[in-house]
Image 1 (tube, one colour):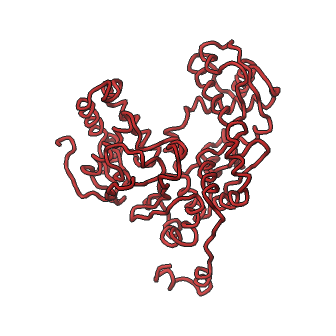
Image 2 (cartoon, rainbow, N blue to C red; image 1 turned 30 degrees about the vertical axis):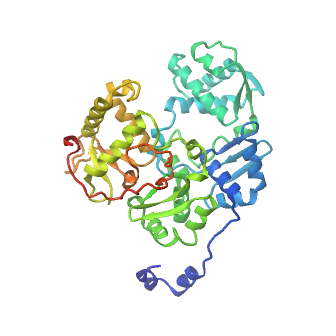
Image 3 (tube, rainbow, N blue to C red; image 1 turned 180 degrees about the vertical axis):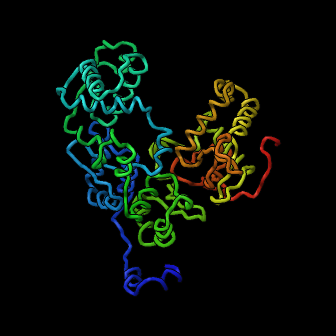
Length: 436
């Protein structure tokens, strides 16, 4: 506690704070790997994830104890492990990289239809039942190519979870031929685990109220633990009073540090925020940490790095969010157009479609950086105009990387590769980036 907090606290509160013991768990490299894997991949299914399922079983008490600190139940069955995570706090950012709304609708329609299907069923029979469920729910059915693509993507998502699996034939063939012979296996015992979070409300009548109930977590400490484990970083500007208090008193103390250690991570605290850092020797492939590696090769990744650097050097400062830098969307597109001409299109340069369409490339970069919470966009100009062009606000952590992609930093790690000089959080340069 700070001196002011101690003076305001009762003797019992002060004594409780002093006597609090740091939580700990018996975690070794295998436990940490299992925790990180489940945090990024909440479904483990037999035949695909046998080694990790065995590791979870060997260390079940430690794994369950750690996830209990986050309020995430762990279901362990004979041939399946399911971590029931809470909804992400940054709903909009996660939606930026989520499947389309149409795909998500068909995902749940197929789940509803699969419940009444036999253990082995033809794809056509399952889709017919799902379309009947759509009609019953008042949802439109078009039977067109877009719909078939959404159904195929939804089936791949179910296959990833081991709920509905391909036995014979390919779901891809269904996109162009509704009568393609495809045999599926339905695992009925796993259908009940598809929906991880419930609320005593009607999502169709009041979706916002239902989401608010599902996402509700009154305990500030648990909210902070979840965000640090499940997000790239936590920005101080986003926290309420109780969360800020936890960050200042317990991030490096009896709560945050042992939790980071259990996952094999290192706590890092800055004035603008905090993160759990993943050491580069803790993973073999970047995708093991989540769906958004960064930095990453390719045109979108390179353009994102260059924009982060341009914002750090030339972006306007935020008055209410220390360390955040802003570039108007018109400047972003202008920079991408200039860099496209500089690097050229084709072999050794950027993708031709991105060079020819800088606005489209900007959307790809927006999706990547928004999903990492390194970027937020709004329509508020410095003068408070709510009707101006979109403003790209870059997180202080966006200045963490050099423009050149490096294999040492990946999504969710907030790290600097060994031997590389760390970038400052608050660059002091200010200029017009289009006049370099």
